[in-house]
Image (tube, rainbow, N blue to C red; front, side, top):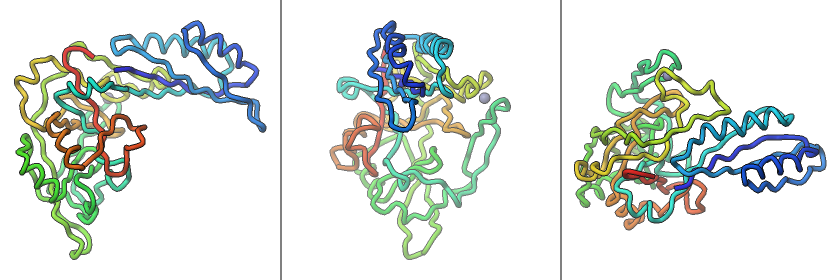
Length: 306
Ligand SMILES: [Zn+2]
């Protein structure tokens, strides 16, 4: 696994040579963009790679502070984190964190009609929990041509085709709750909320985290959930002896902006089945060309070490 933090900023073109030599001190080869016709401002996007065990916070703090001190950077320095995995990591993983079941708005809906209840999770940062007061309510015609869709970034709904596949393949660790149709009666389709209640154990003590050094205000020190970038999930090896179902939840809380939830995991067996059955293609990065509107993106879990 490789961790890449791509920093981005604008600066006047006249500093190009100095920026290049600044990054050479860190053994990072930077190629400056050409000066545009209209403005002398240029934009840098500089990928900085880290090993998963490294203290990225410390090094990024240093680079950021030195850059801001030495150069008239226009506005702020942005950051984007990307974790990339090799084939062996996909082969070995006992579980995968399911990130999405389609790279499109149709696969990621907001629940407009369901009755939900919110509670304050953290007084300090305002994060909230969200729970359903009754069955999910949805225009079930939205499931046409989909095996599974996500609602509100935390609830999963499957179609009849998916429910059949899971039953036939003896997938374990879930039950279904009926979804109530709202919309034209003639467009109603069978739809089921995928309810998973079993958590995986707590993450390994060797897990790593990151907090954007450019956005210290995003971080909440009280709940330690908001603003926290969790590295790919790391467990002690014993997890595979004690957890033999196909579906689990993360034991810890994760934030999707305003709310907290427990992300979903699927087993290696289930992932293989989905690919064999053509439910999804084998997508390994959100930047893959094959990450389409119906493809599932999932990331491998690690055992004992990254
Ligand atoms: Zn908080």
